[in-house]
Image (cartoon, rainbow over all chains, first blue to last red; front, side, top):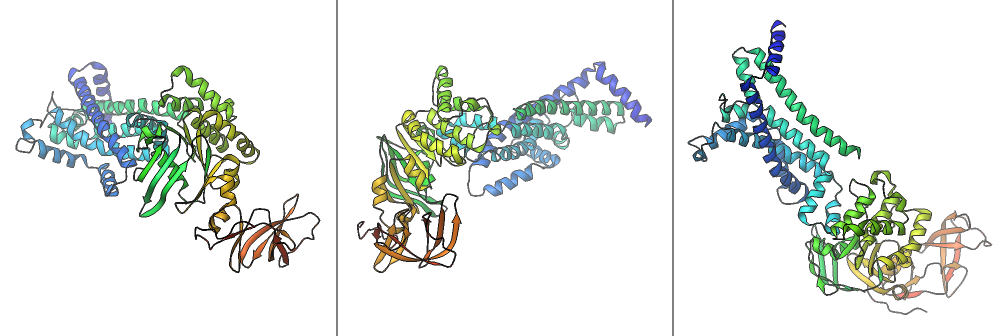
Length: 232
Length: 325
């Protein structure tokens, strides 16, 4: 209990003390997970839409893969990305291993199935006749996608929340492909592991609080937007 | 503009749902596509709107062929059977449809309001879809289609979900509304009375095939076979040598040119009159009893007859072998 109290005191000192390394970690976390989520949205939303709307052989199989992917163990994703990006691997020449780029790729791989799954479910929940209605009204394919996305906004916002949550909270992949290098690839989750293992409980707790606040802040923002839409 | 289908064939899950060698829906008229559920009526409407991607053959709207996609959609207005709206006010929904058709912003409000007025829902324009009844939504569904003032307007069961007096009123007003907002209207319905009330021409569709088409009077007076005659409201009775199609309401109690024995199975009090239901040699029949007639009870045998009827060939032969008598 004493350690927890001391940790909490130390955490508040860090939070309000302006430690540059601490805030660099926070910024890096936002950058890496934000970029991974944005990329995953740009790929996952159209893919989810196609899976929801198109009928093709093997669709059920693809959907089952996506559903499995929604619960991928991050450390396994990290291992696969590491094997691909490591210097002797097929994409080793890009020299991405142990960089923020590698971490974005790994988190992208974790987020994308989540976003595809949520998007497909939210598009499938729309009235089945809605796309045909928009076609006969004269909406071109892009306008149709935008109008359908707006109708499915509740589900799509849930997709962003889940995708970002999956990215920001994982530790195994970031550790494996980022290497947890101080001042370079250390993010909140990997920093928590490091600080805990070396007994700096106050810093670990402070980082944990910030991670929770960050996760909560993003989710709160999206929930407000989501519920404003629902109230209409 | 005319709607012309040539060699139109559409299959779904290995089943041919539409097979139309030739069909002309005439410009400037209201045409009803009449048929039972599963006859292919909606598929035909969707093909005209360019929504059936796997269609073989061709459909032309005037001199332009229909290609699947949103460009075909822009030449027609389509009110689907299910009234679907976006999560927005009905005004926004109607104005969005006009926006997608490229109508200038300055004209949208007036056009939306005008169409809603004709359907009696103008006072509901600022409501959201979930605040409206099924009948009100259906009226907005029709209003959205007519507001586009497309040369061709397609309506899939436009009266569905509208009951009672509102339905009667809409049936009375719709023909005038269609004349005001569109040139050529196609209305899909399974209800023969609705088809005859709303349309000038009737196309009878059965099992994906056009079995009769033309001005409604001609189609009614000359059904090609028993199946079509039954759909048009005739009572079909078998007699030695052929099939007899008795027009709606022509059956009465007593001997007549054609006389039958009816076994009564039920008598219903409809308030202002009684209706006897039963069978003639296994075929279900119904007739209205005059107010002064003795009321039969189930199990009675009644002598009934008709003075007008059509002689038809065997069901689905596609030919009539005798003219009306």
